[in-house]
Every structure is written in C-alpha cells, then in structure tokens.
Image (cartoon, rainbow, N blue to C red; front, side, top):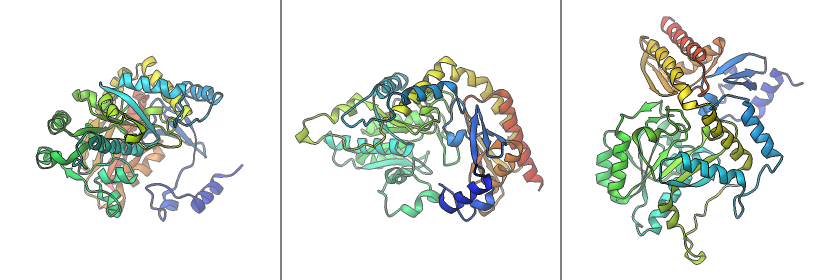
Length: 423
C-alpha cells in the first residue's frame, strides 16, 4: 500500500492544483482525503474533519449517502454514458422534467453541460444568438456586476469582474458593460438598447467574498431587463439547491429569469453535471429548417451523462423525502446564533450570511500574510475543514448539517479568530 508520504511526493511531482500557488503547496501541509462519512471527511491518516465548505460548495446531503450510491450503481449496470447528440436516455429526460417542475415558470427547457462555467457559457451564447435570430443584431453586449464571478472558461471570465482572477486574461475576453449595485439603473439607461443579456448571481455574490445584495435589488433588475428588452441570466451555480434557504435564490424575490444556470449541488456533490434552463420563447427562436442554420451549435461529450443524471434525480428525491428545506431552518438559526458571537470580535470586519452561505471578513491584516488561510489551517487541528477567499472565511456546510455540528463549526471559528486577535 502506498504511504501518505509517497502519495504526497507523487502529487508534488505531477499534479498542478487549481487556484493554488504551487511553490507554497508543500509547506501548506496538504491533506489526502481518503473517504467521506456524512458531513465529515477522513484523511489518509484517519483524522476526521467537518466538511464546512461542502467540498467546494457542492455537497448537499453529506458524503457516502446510501440513496445516491445506489442510484449511481443501478445506472452503472445499465449504461455509464451515451451521447445526447442525436440520442437521448431516460435519466436525462426525467431530470429535465423534474428541474422544469421545480424552477420558476416559464423555465421549461433544459440544456445540459458539465460545470458551472459551461452552464453560464451556454446561457451567454443562447442569449446572444436569440437576439440575432429575433431581429436585434445590435444587441451584442452583456451587462454584469463588478466583483462578479461566473466561472473560468473565457466567456464566463469575460462577464467576471474580479481582477485577482481575471486581469491576466483581459486581452482574450470580450468587453462587458459593468455596473455596481447602486448604479444599475444608469447602466440600463445608457446601454439598455445594446445589451443582449444581464448576468447576475442572485442575492449573494459567492466568490467575491459572500457579498449581499439588498432585498428588492434583484426584482428591480428583472424590471429593468423587461423594460429594455434585455434577457436576464441568473447564475445559481452556488446559490441553487437550498443554499440560501429556498430551492433557488430567485424564489425569495419572485423573480423569473430568462435563463437559470445550475451545477454544483445538482448531483448532491457526487458527479459533474450542469444545466441551463430557459423558456419556450427563447427555445422557439432557434427552430427552423436546416438551411436557415438557426441551430444552437454547442455541446459537450459528457452532456447529460446518465450516471450524473441518476445521481441528480436521487439528490432531488432526498430533498422531498427528508424535507431538507424545512429541516435546515432550525440549524440555520443555530448557525446564525454562533455567527452573532463571532461578530463581536475586534478583528472581524463583517459577517455576511444568506442561509447556509456565510462570509466572515477579517480586518487589519496585509494580504500577503495569508491570514485567512492561516485561520483555516489552524481550524484543522479542531477537526474543521475550511477554505478562505483571501481574508474572508467561507462557511458553506452541507444542508445535512446538524445542530451539534453547527455549534462546533462556529465555536471553532470563534476560538481561532480570537486566538489570532491575541497573537
């Protein structure tokens, strides 16, 4: 059996990790995760950690869930993969119908891809082509927020607005009409006539540091889009599937976008799968003869993978059988109570929360000190696994979090930030 030391040596020799300065990686004491048990991860040395970031915001009902395992195994005995180009299969059909039943009306059409980035990419291309097909050739620009993050493919990077992630690629991407929360009306007045679409993470901007939008703001954006003939793209890759307390964040303001992009929690965190939902109105614009070339020429090898679709169906079934959205409410209150205590610390600038999405921003530390990372690293000793966004500590536990685990999580974070203040 290969030892932990040998595996880490192989990792250092061959693996290039995402969003990681590899010169620092050996000194960061990396963990090798061996297995998952409920809301906990176990490393190669047998140490247990509460997965307080849901394995990058995607684990919903915990790890190693029997229902999801069995759904994938049953599908594995049928067919592991079949293309959706010119063919179809039952799991993708059933999942599309289920998503259409859960999403705000009139979102009834589902286009599959394999990541949050591609879900947004699909929406951007659909919106652009729709405007061309419906007689609006001058609508070629996309509107987006400052500090936006929508993924890492080039179209998604284009509508992203975080200099740390995107500045290096500025010569490769298309220009965007960008706005702040407070100047969105001015953006539409100046550029509404040339916008194909406006893209936004509803209620909370995740990778920007869990930045909250005031209630009513998203509804205002929907009204502006309708007034100016602009398509609204809501990126619910991070916010979807219960993270903000409702199945989709847009429900909290009764917003019905033209596109709804989902991924991450779609399969319960088990397998890569994404979907872009849209309306009959958008779909119908692409219908025509072969000679008209209205077809949406976009697709992926693993579009609508049967194993992933089976996992997604089992994931959504658990939402119903376990009444997940109701069950998480008292735990959310416990989480909030623990966060209120953290708010009192002198080295905490702000605590931002929407459901099970939390950002705790530290203050007074230089960026190069990697203070957020050091706090997260220290929390490992207490059995809590976190990953920061700069000096913003992100807490995004699985929706299956228990009350005891919520108290453990906020208690460890409180203690570690307190220790930092005393240092």
